[in-house]
Image 1 (cartoon, helix red, strand yellow):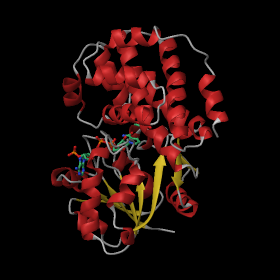
Image 2 (image 1 turned 90 degrees about the horizontal axis):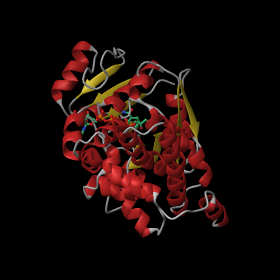
Image 3 (image 1 turned 90 degrees about the vertical axis):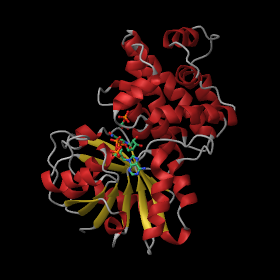
Length: 344
Ligand SMILES: NC(=O)C1=CN([C@@H]2O[C@H](COP(=O)(O)OP(=O)(O)OC[C@H]3O[C@@H](n4cnc5c(N)ncnc54)[C@H](OP(=O)(O)O)[C@@H]3O)[C@@H](O)[C@H]2O)C=CC1
Ligand SMILES: O=C(CO)COP(=O)(O)O
């Protein structure tokens, strides 16, 4: 069935997902807060800053007026950086009258409140305006999705019927969507992989090789699963697309902004300089702060996160942080896994 869907956020991911939906025959209203970018989208069928060279299908119409973009919307895809989410939700609730399904695609955790994005949505939206919250997450760089390269993601919600509805809207021959009822595990995996990608960029920037990256991916997964399971996620979710899958793609792809930011840090640039030059969101920085706080709250060992926290926020030299990780007290590789399985 052809639907009308609103995508909020005209950056790389919002625009790439609008393409998937338009390819599936849906009418897509793409909202961005900068009128100049929206004019460019409508007049040239391009979004050169975020997806250079990609031609946007005619079924995508750009809007800079939020109320107009939401008129008649039943399903709304929220594709803005996590730090913008509360503001955008508050604006949405002022301009809609009927309940909507929100599909969020952002990867982060809010520092201090330590809330996952679906929890922020439930907190911020009046309940009579919110039908369901679904998260769509997985190994999916916008650059490749916009070129119809094969991609797999996961749709998750407390309400499996809603997760399946979103699966149906997005799935096609090159964008395969699975479902998973474990929204906690899906959101935690998607958010925390950015921390490990920053660390992988740092080790690459320092000149270490593939062994270091493999170590980060596997030991990173151990600490993500350790925290995520304590928070109520299913340990098996971390071996799926939104866990190891997203870790692999983000730690190894030059498309990753988190990996690129880490790489520049490893080469000696300062954090402020790196973020200024990126021009796109690097979610892992804020999420490192949140994960550091979560590790303390849940009393979970997260050595990679803690080492990165010191590099980002305590001016620790990346090389010294790596050296201290390697000099930690020796331990049993599977200790974590045994504990996770026994605690369930
Ligand atoms: N890019 C990717 O491959 C993927 C990204 N994601 C996630 O999607 C989320 C969005 O990332 P992505 O699209 O890549 O980020 P980008 O940096 O590419 O784009 C972010 C967009 O959000 C806009 N924006 C920033 N602040 C606000 C605000 N207060 N109100 C409205 N719009 C705002 C930006 O506008 P402006 O131009 O003014 O800065 C820009 O259009 C992130 O959480 C990311 O982790 C998930 C999967 C894949
Ligand atoms: O989440 C992503 C791929 O799955 C995008 O990662 P970056 O934000 O690091 O580019």
